[in-house]
Figure 1 (cartoon, rainbow, N blue to C red):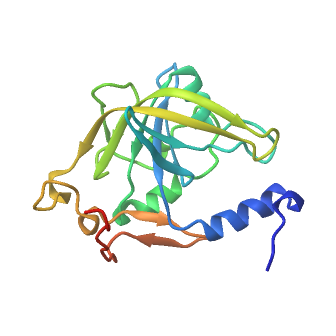
Figure 2 (cartoon, rainbow, N blue to C red; figure 1 turned 90 degrees about the vertical axis):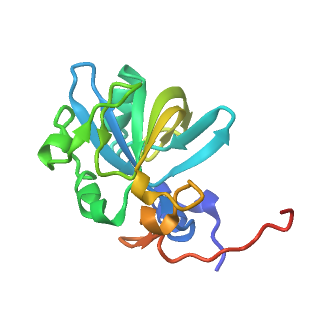
Length: 203
């Protein structure tokens, strides 16, 4: 099969991309409005992009009618956010927070997600998340226009919270103990428990 992406409608291109670029880690982003109302939403267009300075990115697409998602609106007004990693135990409530609530209605309050204050940024972090990254906005890059256009949000990592119980003997996180979920195509997910190892040839 050959796919000419220049001929595909954005929604069809999205379906092919999300069904083939697998697995994708999930950034469960907590933000806050200037009025102090929290927002929580998952994004699977997400990745680490640099270590010097420590930087990650996630991509909130515009809605089908071309409006900005609440997460992006909050970050433009309060340029800070927290990336909470999602273990299997939180997968259901993570999915719940993908609901399209009206702007100003908190998913954290509606779905009873327990949070605690962050140390360096205003949005709270998720207590049960095994890893949370406190981030300051670095820049936003607009790609495309109209429905499904994207704003690539780059965040400078200011601090991380890592639960002691997910650490291996070498002091770094163990993928099996993290038990994170990843996004696959359609409504499928994967987990980090099933792994294998390959030694790099330069080591």
